[in-house]
Length: 308
Image: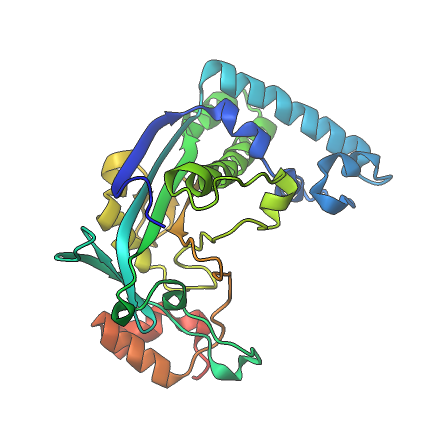
């Protein structure tokens, strides 16, 4: 299905108040090493835990108070850019084009396929979720980068002046949760409106966090594509730093730290997977396709090399 627009769309100040209902509180409690039993992702369950319940409730109340201040004072700013482009797959890779006539190729995103010795019945690569070039089928790939971390350094400075380390940690933790909530909220908008391939979706937050929706949003550097350098292709394609101010550090981490980026796949059969360990033949192929040396490919992919 064709998205509602092609190219990029950005937000310079997305309302933080709209992100709060999308927060997954479980990682927040884990940040503070409060690991009570809270099944079904229902954070109130932890309040009744005999070991950590009282502490968890106080922490949650403090978080709510800080969130109210953040919303009222607009001390954090959420920014985002999303994009959709015509695309087709060539083997494990995905080629991106400026228009549907595919007269100008803009970029190639390189894929890595699971090795057959990983006990999986089917081995996946990114390219499997986009229509092959030879099919002639019109298909698209989406992208996003967003952050709720603009303003965190100022909050840190404010609380450090008060010697309040508790609030420094709290501000960072809430910014991280808001960024993840922003990713959840934006993906919902993509599915229902911007791409519109799931207009009638009506899922609870619990179901969204369990990925019961159609499509996925994997990120370069994570199990489906462990090569962090693929981020640079996305940053250049979308002009992410120019449009949002979200930067890539020398180590390819994102700044502000409370940021999320990735690709949008709409294919109903798309799913998250882990590439796992790979052998030399795949490294050779990857290096050749990406036009880098085998040495560079081994350096980039070192954590998943299946050989010495």
